Image (cartoon, rainbow, N blue to C red):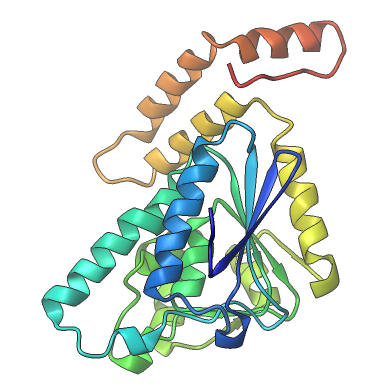
Length: 260
């Protein structure tokens, strides 16, 4: 499939999705969001893909924000629909995906760009990255899950400070806050991302999906995360991957998981 605003590359079981609007600092317009929905839906449904890296084209930006020009003229009803639709179709789709998604944050990740990175399961940043939610400078608040996911990652006080001041934070500070899990040089960013996702996808695919569902359950209102964990733990015992994992452990060999 053709993606005018994305580059899709698959190496082995790793698919890299690159937002390819470098001249616009990879800003998220309607077309790009629609392409992200399609690309991630295909990746999650492709048995050959084990894990996904999401990044931005060029050294300057992961995603510098939403395309603000598309916001002009929207009223309250249209703004509500915009947030609801994009949260469901892109941001929640990624967060609830059955395969691990790692954001390789190169340069600016602002507004919707940081919200996109936070929807991913893991974030790695280049040491020149700058992250922030500047929506209050536009008379807005984050609308793609930013108020919720940032609070989950860094805590209420720091989240409110970042959102209310609209200040950018450095990669070093983001690592300290727990917003990212690793910081490396720009030249090594994709290599570190690939090494991390390669290690992850060597694990049992059904167990990875179960772990993602269990962690997400604990952060979802009305769902008992402990009960979800118990159910998912029990379901693992019925998989061929569990039998293979135990056999490999007892036989002192590397497991050959099939996702079955």
